[in-house]
Image (tube, rainbow, N blue to C red; front, side, top):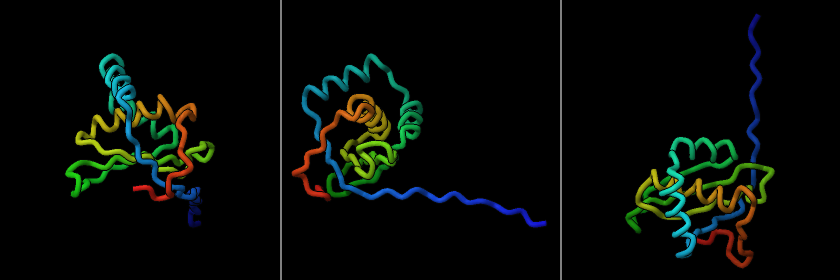
Amino acid sequence: MPKTTKTKTAVKFEFRGFVNLAFTAGELATLEDWLIHGKPDAGDCIQVLLEAGYKIGFSYDDYHDTNQVALTCKDLASIYTGYCFTFKHNDPIRSILICRWLYDSYLKNEDYQIKPDKGKFDW
């Protein structure tokens, strides 16, 4: 008798736009302090982000000669579902740590305010 297999249907979400991140001097100082004193592990950071429903992506930006980092929220229960938070950084490992800091500091408790006056594809 042939075995029947059940396939899972992927839950689709609507892409809502890019959020280009620019950190203030104060945020960068807080980030540096977190990196020095927290000593985060990149593997742990990836695990936390994936379990929280985020997708991490990297691509090389020829024009700016650096990496484009994208943190996309796929958690349907989050107010950030469908948003792709982006920033540029030369070091991919440090970028993962920055993504985790961003999640812990702003996204986990839904404290980041997306400005409604920005365009949907604000590059």
